[in-house]
Image (tube, rainbow, N blue to C red; front, top):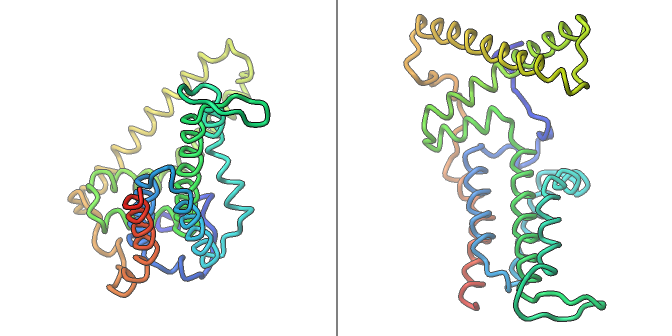
Length: 258
């Protein structure tokens, strides 16, 4: 495996769209500010969530990410959707009748709150993942002064994840060739032993890699050349600030109107 590979994850969609070309740090900040604005919005401000949805549609269009792709990946929030659907039936307080069902008013608002904010947050995260490679995400966090320990651990995990997956695959083939069948419950002991062996191999490999890096001058931070060129300019920050500023304005207006 080439250590310097791009490391595009399964959610990344290759494109040359304006959103893809933005530096990762500005996209991370924009996504976080947008999500905070959505969460801070009163649940009764229905119009505000329509505005947020419009912003998501605009960004998805600019990023050339289709609605079918977004909605299919957004199914990850399905467990929360099921919980939200149950709230109108389980909630207390005033109740209303809808289609013959006696539903809690507070439960309906709570269900809407979870569905609207959760869906918008998931869609914003998916847009970030679809337009930014994993390596660029780590690079963006590093430029935003995220603790070096976290970014270094994430960087090494990214670089050697394929190695560990390959090792696990070889161990599984070796077990099966010796008559092991992981489908049977009573063979979980062998599976657990394999996980332990994989951990020990990964630990030993990590020690060897770390000592090799120390011998080559590693001081706890990757060299500046790893970060490369392309840090965000003032103009790029201004362009990327459009969405979070609009979202913050919507949230502030909703809070004032109360």
